[in-house]
Length: 271
Image (cartoon, rainbow, N blue to C red; front, side, top):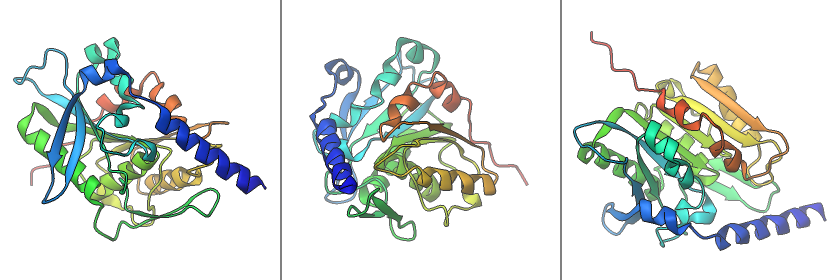
């Protein structure tokens, strides 16, 4: 009976997420664009440029990966969670950045994982030894394109994501060592057994609620433990009594932006 009730609550929560709409004000600031990736694949995305964008300067780039409830092709739903953080006047002034929200199609996933929804909580197996799903590969290709064409500080490229996007965040860092100066995965998880020293250039700040009934908190705890073993810079913030919506807490952290901005990829040492 407990499992049935939990499943019903999960279904209702999914409907609630899908019923939400993106604020019209947000849509005005984030420009709608598409990225063509290989034959037959189009990745919708929204992009926010700094105020008074000056191409003679260099700006950090922040890649934000949404959760499963925001998948689709409308190029709007991906902005439901987190976008307002980057529109706060104080953040636009103190932390000018190019912010990118791609949208994953409904039939795919940011992370390369197998999902068993018959279990409670849901069971995930992360398949890092296979090729990445095309939306993840497309999101990385989009970042690389923007790094070439826009005024991006290549030493300060950051990634964050929630739930499915948190899983995609862990995987993207693993598959692209040296690309991201900092990563902030929220209520996600990854394949800690395959994580290795190649991720050492990235600083991590991991968030999760200890009462998460969808993505169990152990997934983040295991990743944090592995990062510590590898001597990777990592902070872990766990919210007591918080369920799957820990992104609300994470995006409300007063130093969310300043933590990202303090990190830079160190240049390679000359031999």
